[in-house]
Amino acid sequence: MPSSVCRSSSRSRSFSRSSSRSSSSSSSDEEENNTVAAGRKRKRKSGKKGKKKSKKKHDEFEDYRRFAQWYLRSDRAFIDYTQVLEYGIRFMAKQYGKLSKKKFAEKHAAELDAFFAMKDRISSFDELLKNKAFLDDFDRKHGLAKLMNDAAGSARGNDIKGLLDKGLVYLALELPQKKIEPPIPATLSKDKARGHHHVVFSRLLCPVRLLKEFDKNHDEYRRKILRGDVKFNDQDFPSMLYPLPDGYDPDDLEAGLLQNQTAVRQSGTWVKSQRNGADKPRSIV
Image (cartoon, rainbow, N blue to C red):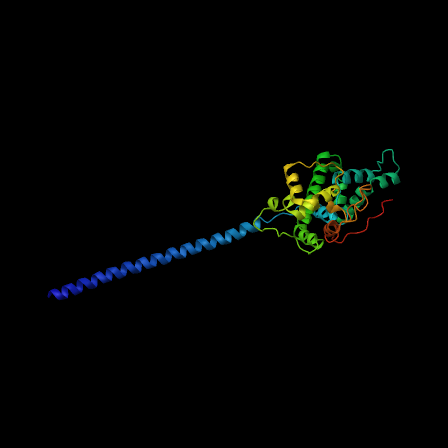
């Protein structure tokens, strides 16, 4: 047999073996890919089933949290739910102490308003009040009160935080040019750019009785403040609480107090614009 034919036959067998290995490898790869894909699909299904199983259960105290947040925004911003539960339960049990029913209701009107609002708005509260184990357990009552106080405190913090963006706008409205000068550098932190570090804020914080001294040389006055050379007492209300320049009377500190427009706008935004369908206080007796 000619050598050329032998070589051709050899190449043919080699190519056939190579093709067979390639086909086998390709088939193996395809099977592996299919196996991996199937595994991923099973994992996704398993994950979905797991998510369904781990669905959150209803929180029995969520209604109490929401009530506390709502009540905070209905013109009764400061209420202690420890006292609400105590005086409300005593009122329902006719335990007035040495007071008559009417006097007891008048003395604790704010707490009783909140207590009866809870009865009106929280469907499970009446059932809870029928539970003698709850009524006799100080820790459970204290725990519920703490939960509601915490919810109200959190809502109050969020409302006050919401004033931060508006605060500088309200402040600028009271300034001659309707803007804060010098501008506040965006790169500085609040503790370096505000307070007595900035002339506008420092003037607002300055005790109103010392305002004339501040205006004579505000740079020197602010340096004294930051060094701790200026001493204040509990009667040194800041100038931002008075409608200046003519709203402060050194002989009558309450005249004009809290009538500064910036303070009024801030409190109005917090108390009124955050209201959420508040009802009028109900009559107890």
